[in-house]
Length: 306
Image 1 (cartoon, rainbow, N blue to C red):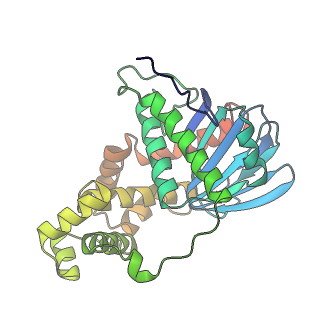
Image 2 (image 1 turned 45 degrees about the vertical axis):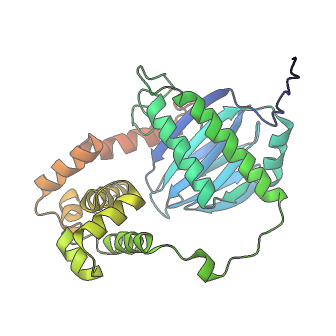
């Protein structure tokens, strides 16, 4: 018996990346602008970002994604408002479907789209050496021993994200679900409440027992719920929150390292420095220097794209 083969239609395809960066910017960062013959997307992971594309201004906040089309002049920066974290991906794609993003330029990603973008970033971190969040990253180099298919996952996640965004704009707006239909389960609620509490009390020294008493749950309940939400332990997450906050404060350049350590509840500047290096592979001084060097490189055109 002979079988007829059906060729799957390909609406858009991405085969070449130009750059892929995760950057932590100083609050006074501003890029004078450029244009290039490929696509660029910038996602605001934290803080705020102001851009101008072909003369049109846009203000972006955490969770926003902006598109720059080929040969569109763009410029922007933090505008003294925050010390933002941004993710920048530039790529070639000549599909006619990409014209959609010339009209719909800025998107606020929903939960599914954020999950896709997180998977894209994870694949990027696994694929290149140095990784995309490294201060040493200048140009994409294949990582020896990268997990099987990691570069293909970058392509798949990026193409899927673009398809989602196009479909979202084409589909009629869905009616908002009533609160009873979207209520999260108890474990998710606990973990979310605890994460919010940790962020609000980032200057304190908290223990698992403190949190169990505060939220009236057992240690097992708390640990299980939190691991389901974040994939890691409660105190591990709390330490990462402190260091992320420290990085932001360092980029803002308003406080000394000693003042930052005190603000975040560290017992000494030495303990703060050890914890910072443990999680970032840099001392606070090295981190501050790397941020300044990246900003200088950007402004002098040493990066391939912004």
